[in-house]
Amino acid sequence: MSRIIKIFDTTLRDGEQAPGYSMNSAEKLELAKQLEILGVDIIEAGFAISSNEDFESIRAIAESLKKTTVCSLARLAKGDIDRAYEAIRPAAHGRIHTFIATSDIHMKHKLKMTKDEVLRRVNEMVRYAASLCEDIEFSAEDALRSDWDFLAAVYSAAIANGAKTINVPDTVGYTTPNEMFDLITYLKNHIPNIDKADISVHCHNDLGMAVSNTLAAVKAGASQVECTVNGIGERSGNAALEEVVMALNTRKDYYDAHTNINTTQIYRTSKMLSTITGIPVSPNKPIVGANAFAHESGIHQHGVMNARTTYEILSPESVGIYQNRMVLGKHSGKHAFQERLEELGYNLSPEELEKSFVSFKSLAEKKREISDRDIEALIGIEQIKDSELFTLERFSVSSGTSVPATSAVTLRKNDEIVEDAALGDGPIDAAFKAIDRLTSSGAKLINYTIQSVTEGQDALGEVVAKLSGPNGITVTGRGLSTDIIEASIKAYLNGVNKILKASGTGASGVPAEPIETI
Image (cartoon, rainbow, N blue to C red; front, side, top):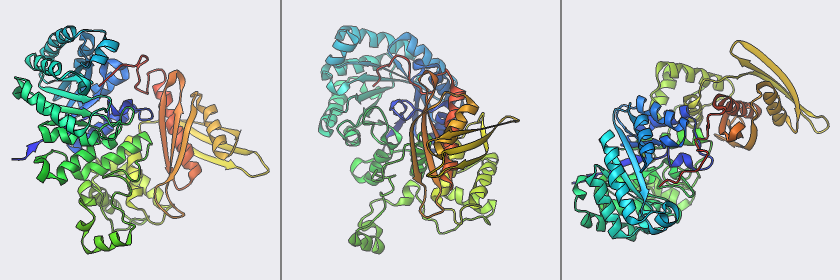
């Protein structure tokens, strides 16, 4: 009988720790809601002790989700465990995920502890965590470089003291699929109380084998896998959720295992993460990349036209990429718009639908035909849009080869209208300087990218602006428009609003002192 593999998503914890992937609390909550729709079993919502913002984000997610287990990471220390418990306490289903390093290199150089001291800490702190929360997961950091006998003893102690899940992290992405298979097999045979806990794996991708190692663990008997959307994470990232899930789904005959994931929500979830972080998915990314279902070779095209199974082992529709034949435009009504959203997997509230329809009609006035990718980009922006301190009323620019670039920008702050003008090195730079003068945010532009959402002269342009603010805050602003200058201004203003809201709260989610994690 096919086994169920639990999906433990750590996009909001391990994924968010990667440079460039920081998210604010509203963005984390929106993504967490989508992960629940996707069907993940456990969401690791953050590391509660690392910052007040992480704590509040975890708590907000715990209060909002109804089906998915909400988890916080914690070191094997009373303060960490208490903070994690307070963060997840409102959850319908809460978990504390606690860890300590077990490899000789980590114990000697980082922990400065002996094996006996580590074992005592495991006994004491896992027991304490279990006194607060019924669902405890224990990880042995750098497990794949640990002594296997010691590892088995540590896991056995954790289970004896209340751990319901033992996690085997390949913290530095060092192992190979055969080694992973052998270790999981060894642990199953050498942990006497293993029948009382799930075996989980957490694989990093430093040598490009995170997904392969994860699948090898499943084949050996692991019942939980830890992964991230789009494979994001520290250094080279983690095992990609979409790749692991679709490998199990496509090769049920080999793995004899399945997940609770609604695969038709995979593409939407991937797109939402890309929208929130402003980091596009590589075209050749398996499952969700733009080229995943594209065929340029004549032989391949001919084969696919005759029978898709010649070159496609899964269908675009199975991951939520639908082929649309209905054209939407400025004469399309709300009902047609809503139907298309539902076909794409979006179930908006009446208020969200109204706001999105207004944005759609505004875009339709500028663009003759609206594609699915236009709609996805538009809805993505609307879903993560937080209440903004400043909104754009209007702007004008002047530029040429023989005159300095100028920009006049008018913003609204509550009921007040403010406007200013500035000179710059081009019209976009001038507009940014005018916004700086109006908002006094202290923002500095780190990176600026433009990409076309669709093809054609009336293509919707998407701008991503990464900004830094006071106290090391780093944010991502996004803007959409058929006018690339307007998109740029919206993206910059979006980032400025985030800086102003976060000012001094550590919006990057990175603690002042780095904390080692699994």
